[in-house]
Image 1 (spheres, rainbow, N blue to C red):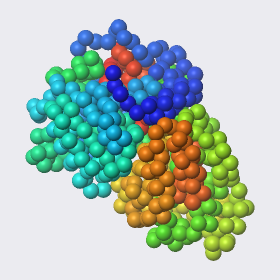
Image 2 (image 1 turned 90 degrees about the vertical axis):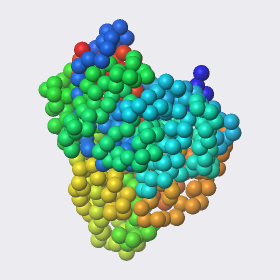
Image 3 (image 1 turned 90 degrees about the horizontal axis):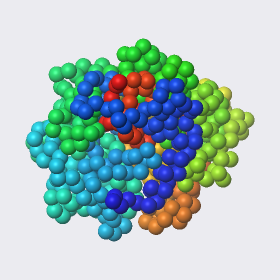
Length: 530
């Protein structure tokens, strides 16, 4: 039996219950579906051997096929090729994959037991030394998107070929969950030792093998079934074909017309039309639409160094108006914090934070020396265009001009992390407070491109929470982090956004598909078309 962190499991289970409750009629919570489109789960009709092509639509090209250098939003291009140490189930609990079980010998160490029957596509074997090579390598990746996960690792010890101990400078309660994301994808030890450039080469052990010759930059990725895969029951489709379709309506049209079988990043306004068209819509609340102010020192935009200015921005970001205008009312804008309502970390006392007040916002701007507002720039990609336009309209009510600037395909996150933009739209997890803080908010996170140290006292609060045993003890501190993040004008929750994907009625699954909270679409494992 897998031994996992109890606190993490309870928090995720609560969120999963919420997801099921909020799923649309005829749609499943997490990764189940039904209604007019029929049942997604078909345990008896799956092909005995891989057959047919499963066609996905993703919203952007990945800058790299190296898991340590691409973001979770590009997981649809990574997961066919690479295996992760763990996966998550329908309740978002971490479950075995390359790791068979895990336990904590002490609060700062996770011990993983590993499979011994896994072979990479290049013929090399997976073992504890492979995990050590991967984690040691990932810790050295400069500017990688998972610094918050890798940096706390102090040592990786090979106990025996099937056992590895990962030790940390501070307790990491959610590390087994993190290993279910792109951050937990394992690269071939041969590729690591040879220093292979994985930008446009792949080196995984996954159920499908990336076809380099078939790749069309910015347009298409193709994967063929791995004949030597350790988990043959998970590979039902012979070919995985992922098309890069940036425009939201173009992706939906592709599914509706039968050109695509699975579409990720279904926008809220598309959910009802997709369902009416006979598509299966999978929907839940697992992340928070968030406006993050990164240039709080005023390096690029002096106005943002003023606390009154940042507070004014928060008062202009009307959550109810955002939900109605952008999410067709499908979001949940009640929460003033960042945790999903119904989850263990939700705190109703935060709901009164930053209720809209245009008059007060204008007063604060005047006090700060900006009675006529000011202008700043944010980065833009097709998938966040509507979010940016809605935010810009809300800020305009107070005289603030938000200039929206397009960036190159697949470079939105990279440009933000270079410090090109002083603020921007993000979608951190709303069910895992450790990832929410360490990846998105923390001064030690990947979005602190301006080198700020303004949250040092809150870092201590976060460390104190991690060191505690039990969610009940941690919760007041997690609530404090959420509250002060808003009150200090660091980031503002806009709404619990419905995470949604659309599947044609021909798509079926032999068992519960893998649809982790940070995935934009179900992973191809266990799926096939009928």
